[in-house]
Length: 383
Length: 244
Image 1: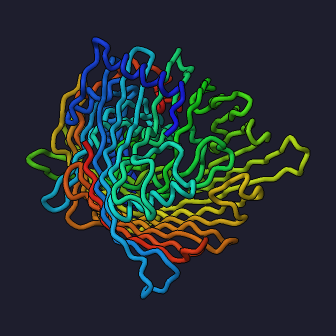
Image 2: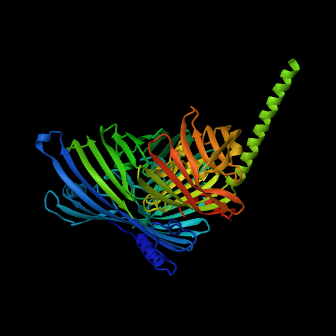
Image 3: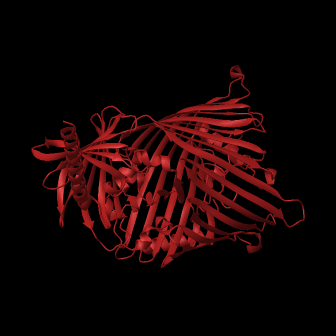
């Protein structure tokens, strides 16, 4: 877990705002007080998530073994402190991983596949990995200053330019974490300056200088609603990759929702440029919501290490079986590399603030472990 | 005889015109009650299936029929915000710091898993602008005399194709309603459980919605601290406010 000076500054601001004389902890029952935008407030919330599963990983020869059992307990804490014209926010997570969950995470550490905002204890372990692992991550930790309606956000934040459900070629800041049951967008340590342009428009400048400004990421984006189409134009610079990007994205509503996201990369080396593009649609009928998305990566692993192949597909179907029960199925499919993952999840609200989930997850292709799968259950309690 | 037939036809037309006018007048008075300029309230949705109930709390502001801003405050959804501008709707998810534009077809879906659609919750009830009204007769609801008025959609943006309303003859509040799809199928009913005097108007502050497309479910939408004609900052209805 790498935490920059920006994130530390945000942490100090959070403590400072929380300690203010007008700070008041909210009661979950009293929504109006918790959400008051007019006065100083401190809101503390979060969740505890318990997950247990059995897993298989191997070549498909089940007699050869490869079965395991894992569990994890995750505590998520969200803190939000508001003052006059200032806000500080933090989203923190810590998890205890057992058995196969610890060993899988350990394998990901060894392969360099660990999300950049996550760290683990112990840092070393015997061959095969530890039986128990503690993970911690700072998802977000930022301070936001508002002068009129111009805002400056500093610290770890999710820049989130994305239009689609999964891929966003124009967003060079936000990495995806696909290790969980649903995709998670990771925060970046950045400075963000936003100027509103009318009710639906904005000019947005983001800088993530890192430790060496010339190696940092920078972008400028102009967005707005034009003739019912939510659209944006952007330009970005990746100092480390010595590449400049121009891009555009949109979402239009023609009964069904249609969206697209396009980015062209031009390297300093004089080599030929490459482009990445994503497009998709969403639609609801009866109790079902369906979304489908296609992603083309013309830049290979250098442009997108997580999806290095050219043609990729994402599909998602949600069945709202009742007010308390959702059943969803999703698939991410690398059409070129012939690998993918599929997840089916049923979530039931068993009590106020408590959700029970049952899921199955399968992966195929993409290396020595040709087939993998999980069957598991989750229980999440929000507070 | 020919003339008598003509007179009868004219009298029928005149009576029909009179009834239509009467329905329009009733609806105009309902609109006076239900439509608003600027409005602010805190709300609570109680979603029930069988004997199980879950609640969601929110605070909301609205400006006419086109602009609304809602922030959820219950633990599971805390900080989730909705901005509706005309027919466009955006949702902000605080954990992901993500603003998503919602497609129009989702406006008819249940809001946060309830029987209350986004249109039910976020629109000003300017019925005259969207429906033709016909007076169908009179009835009694929970001891109160009501006009029964049928509304037929005259614009495609109307939330329902046909509505049947039981309107309190004294307070001009809709005490009971049936909403129908184009096919004629009953898709939802609502009933005012509490009617509150707010300034010069009567307003249903607690309404029960029952989806007829699902079994044994209902949602009670309760509004408290309702304020009309409050001075709202127009910047409240902007994308910038979603992330503020």
